[in-house]
Each structure stands twice: as C-alpha cells, then as structure tokens.
Length: 451
Image (tube, rainbow, N blue to C red; front, side):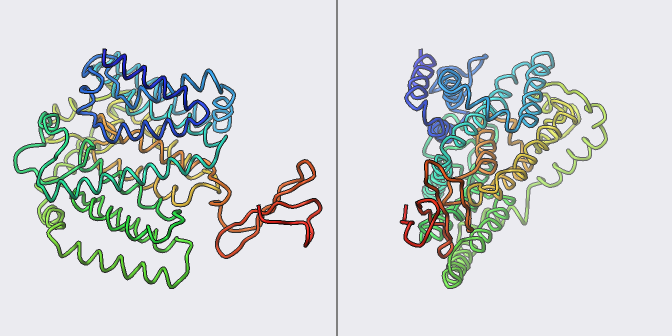
C-alpha cells in the first residue's frame, strides 16, 4: 500500500511538472538525500524484491513516463545530439542487468537499476529539460548546493550532540555503525557519500551571484567534510575551495579578502577538535591503505578472468571474500570490472569522462570541475555498489557540465544572433558580466535599449 502511495504521488508530481522536468529530477535528488537507501523501506514498504527501488527512483521513472507522453520529441533530440554516448551507456546498462540476472548475484538487479539505469534516465530527462529551458539548470545547481549545506549543518549538529539523530535504528543494521562511532553523515548512507556530495557542491559556488555567500557556505561545507573524516574528501574540498577563490568573477581586492577569510577559517578548523578525527585517520588508518593495496594486487593478478564478462552487480563482494580480502575492492571501476567485465566497466566510465570533457562551452560555472571531482572520488570507495545517492549525484553533476546554462552565465564576450522579426539581441560585456540589449535592426547608437 505504501509503495502504491509513493508511486501515485510521484506520478502526480511528474504530471504537474511535465513542463519543468528539471524541477522533478531535482526533487528526486532531494528524496535520495534525505531518505538514505538503508531506510527507504520505511517509506515504500519494500526492502527486497524487484519493486524495492528507492523512492527517488520511482519519481525519476514517473517523470520519464510523463515526458514520453508530453515531450517525446525533446527526449529524441537529446539522444540524437549525443547518440554514441547514449548507445554506449545503454548497452552497458543492458549488459549489467542481463549479467546480473543470469549470474551469481541476481539480487543485484535492483542495485543496478538504482545506481546505473535510473540515474542515466535522469540525465536523459535533464538533457531535454535544460535544452528547452537553460535557466532551469541553475535550479539543479542550487539544489545540489542547498543539500550539501543543509547536510553539513546537520552533520555539525550530530558532531556537537554525538548522536546520529535520524534513522538510528536503520543505521544500526550496518556492520560499520557500532558504539563509539564518531564519523557523521547527515541523512546520507555513509560519511564518504556525504563527503562526495559536499565536494561536488563546492566548485559550483563559483557561479553564485551573491558573492558574500561564497565564504559563508564554503566554511560551513569545509567543516562538514572535516567531520566526515574523509581524507580524500578533505583534499578534494581544499582544492575545490582554491578553485572557487581563483575562478570567481570578482575584483582582485575581494579575492584577497576571500583568501584571508578562508586561510583563517582553515587554521581555526585545523586547530580545533573538529579535525582530530581526520588527523587520527591520517596518522593511523587502521589498515585501510594496506587493505586497498591487497585488493589492487589481487585484481592485478586476476583481471584477465574478467576481461569480457563478470558475475553481475555485487558479485565482486563474493570474489573479494573468496580471495581472502578483509574488505571489498573499495574502487568503483575495479568492482564494476569484476561485476561486468573490464571492457564494459571501462566503456562506462570513459563515456562519462568524454561527456564531461566535450560539454558545452556555455556550461554552468564550476560544473566541469565538480563533475571531474565526483568521478575521481567515486573511485576511492565502494560508491556505486551500495544503494545511495551517488549514482544520481554523478549523473546530475555530469548534466550540469555537459549542457548549456543560461546566457548570463556563459562568460564574457560579444555575441550577435541573426535578426528575428526585424529585431536582434546583442550581448555586450560590462565589467565581468554579460548584459543583453534589445535592438532594432540594423543596430545604431539610438536604436538599443536595455533588455
């Protein structure tokens, strides 16, 4: 009954937002974040079986259905624009589902849908929606930033209260969540997942129009990523903060002030009790590096067995156990290589990188850096082999990096479109921002007025 209610509400939302599908996908991203995969059964009533998809996935599927009914041409055009990338990813997804159903890990089909298929369908919907309304890309960007900031604040509260606050009973079912646990994750499924969300959001701050917000949000998110105790996350967040300072379209004086603020904040965080956890993990990683080294050694010795095919999604856990490893392979590519085959795993991640690097030159500011950052961070843990928001986050940020944003975020320069109905639009540079003007044709000194 609860599943029927979730699907029904999702369908209503999708139909109401049929002209604004980007908002619907943004809501799905919110659901994925505030309802962790470990607790989704409380919302849908399904924890096992082929219908145990995450509630956010159901919203994506109903949105796709609404778009197929109301805007099939937009979806077709989005696919045609990048047909080879779409075909490559869809073939990998089809092979993943087939190998999983026929392999030793048939229960992994739902995970393949949640982390591979549905996120890519969300990217397809975003491609059509943002192409039709480029300004809607800013909505998705703001949602990612808002979720990262909100989760960072919740993490600070969890740290101060030494309590997870939400979903405690559900997290107790995880083997790693035990008494004495001091790494907090907000409402995401793991501290490393939260760290990845924060690191994706930091470069996107470079495009904020309210410059005074940048240092405030940066400090909050940096505190949040330190509390997660993710070593790779702290490094990536630091690099992201440097990118925001250097790439912001603002005066030199403001950049100097921002550098001073960030330096002072970093010093305060580093010398406070907030950083004690991550410092301890640097000094003593409890065998984490050794376990990862053993996993890589085992894969290097046996990769030829998985060149063309694998045992299906999640089969890598069984392979790691049989190989005598104390942990999983802790790397998305290696885990997919064992599950699907090295060739298919490489095709999947290479296609993502190609999409990002060949994205629109008018992409939203900071989106390419954010996309590359999440593609690197997902290789530092078993990110795509656990039901979490990672799949949706990766493909959502890739969409921001691939698709053109609104003209006002396109960067400096002068662009002239051809005359339309006797009129034309000029874009002239004023300072560092582009200002559109509406002109008569041919343009003259007295024929233009601000748009």
